[in-house]
Image (cartoon, rainbow, N blue to C red):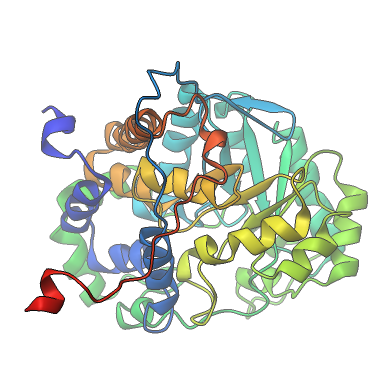
Length: 393
């Protein structure tokens, strides 16, 4: 099958992924919180960004290579952390880490992934990032960072936008629980999706393997059996917490979930980069869209501090839209998982192909030699005058 003909867009991969996944898994991957308005705003904000095309610009030699935080990447694109990727497709973290290594991109592993840093670090080709959901226990925090560093992860992502759990109503309606309980309704969904079910039968249902040692009495001591392992994550970090992480981590440090220009400005002396994100719309229904807030974040941190952004990336055009608004680098999560669920590893690779080819095409349309040249190329449109065919009608 020629995927470029049958599935030329990320939306095509999304449609196939929905058909292949059990409903509860689909809801985990695709849902936001509340009425989905935060995620919808992200898409609408991207769609509203109009870029300036070029004419008579010749044919620039296009180069997508990008340097960020001391490392070279083939595209201004990385694979964002997605908790429990292994629920979406068997062995997802390993497939995606290998894909990132092959494509010359960073892969960010969550500490609530289905695989451990020790297992995934060697697969990243030296381009591994590690996402830390802040544990309340300092000893566990230090041990997680030590494990990540020893496994070859060179950049730490501190997730700062999950002080409390969100409700995620679509997941609740789908009866999704953690740890997963295979009830009769869930089993009925599973048997209808044989490709996913057979893969899970081979791999086993995913678990929070990275955190299991602590629940069993590793660093930080034993915990009551009545406490779910997720209690380790029930920490609302503050500025002192960030300073402690800064002191303890030897390497680039990124703070993820930044949507407030004042906070971004304050981070300039503590973090090496800020990551503008609304958590895929999964955390706070009233959060602003990354594309909408990016110019204010860029102004707050100045021209030199790296700014990473994510949020509803569906095309190479969306990558350039975020970069035009102030981002230096863009992270994708759902897009590659749609590909993985649609066609396995080949589908995830196709998702990267779709984004890369779209990016190159639009760079040609805009007369850009590099993606970063899109900065400031947003095109303000004149306000409607009310004069024209529709007005005449």
